[in-house]
Amino acid sequence: MTTAFTLPIQVVEAGPFTAWLVEDHSVPVVSLSWSWPGGAALDAPGREGTAAMAAAMLTEGAGDLRALAFADALRDAAIGLNFGAGRDAFDGSFRCLTDALPESVRLAKLAMTAPRMDADALERVRARAIAGARTQLETPRGQAGRAFWASAFPHHPAGRPSNGTAESLAAIPPEALRSALDAQLRRGGLLIAAAGAIRPAQLAALMEDLFGTLPAGAPQVPPPLPAFTTFGRQIVPVPSPQSQIVFGQPGIAPQDPDWEVAQVVLRVLGGGGFSSRLMEAVRVQRGLTYGIGVGLDTLFGGGVVTGGFATENARVAEALDVTRGVWSDLAQTGPTEAELEEAIAYLTGSLPLQFTDSRRIAGTLLAMRRNNRPLGWLDGRNERLRAITRADAVRFSAALLKPDTLAVTVAGEPVGL
Image 1 (spheres, rainbow, N blue to C red):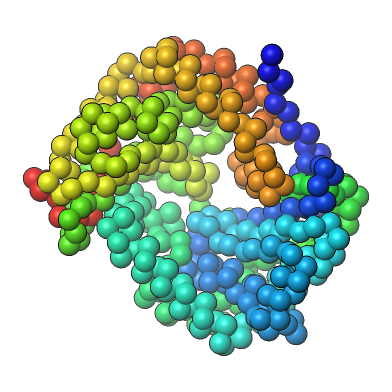
Image 2: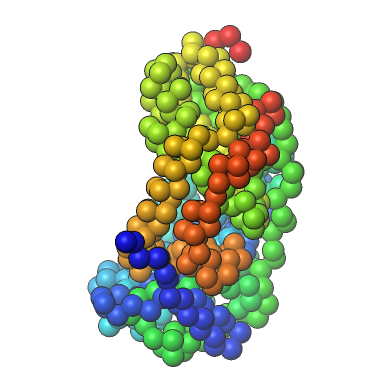
């Protein structure tokens, strides 16, 4: 007999701050994660990558500690401190031993309130960001992804590269980074999650210490995700023996009542490795690609179903025809009983693996808060999955999957398209 999964979440409040906490003293480790709305969505046009660069600069020296001294302080106390800017959020986190908790708070607070922005550190971060942008965007995969999102959301931040381009990164002046941090790092709009060997009273005091001196107010909230622009098929010419294909269509928002049904249907379609229909049809039966997958990308409060694969230029048309055929078949018939059972068994059985350490727990709590999940959402997840019937899956497959409106971007030199 299996034991029902539970995650004992406590709500901790301190002044204007609220955190979700999973307390566990089995090992002396604490993980804290926090987030604001904003991130790359607040980058000015032509200066894409500003938020990402600003986040990277927060650990490149603060207060009287230059970059090397700051890194040494983190290393000496075995502290993992990170900041990052996603498409619609700006994040921070640290993980440390309980003995190093005061030092973790001190350094994280110093980073947020007194970043140095030394010229040598800035140019090193800029060079690294430019190299990363070139690596990401100048390959067939990068060019396909960039073109896909730009066409799907042409007038929204979701359509821009969140980490910037080589050109935009080179044009960002130091004052733009400080302005971005001033607009982003605020007392308002904060979502906080913690896990590990910390008691509620300790967490309450920590929040006031760490965030209490930030400026008042909240960052600008990014605009919601607009309707997906179904652009048909586009080709990005890239000299390469293979083409990279990115495809997608409108998805569902995290608050949709069919969220769990979507996880089951998409696993059957392309999220289950060799057990998925797309992998079986495109790779196993025909050898058209090494791998193909599909997932639900959530951003700006909405969702997009996306997938991708690479194949020889001469076989792109065939691979796309097979993909559309699988998409259409699942839309018409839904999963079989066997597929439904396998998907539910996997999703329910793998749930505890998401909570193997404090950092993953804190990250999951933060994601729940971003998606406006109730406290008991995880505790009831497996029961909701097991309650899904084949009729539910058939109904949802027909409602979600629209092969005739699937948007496709091909980067390469495809033959016959």
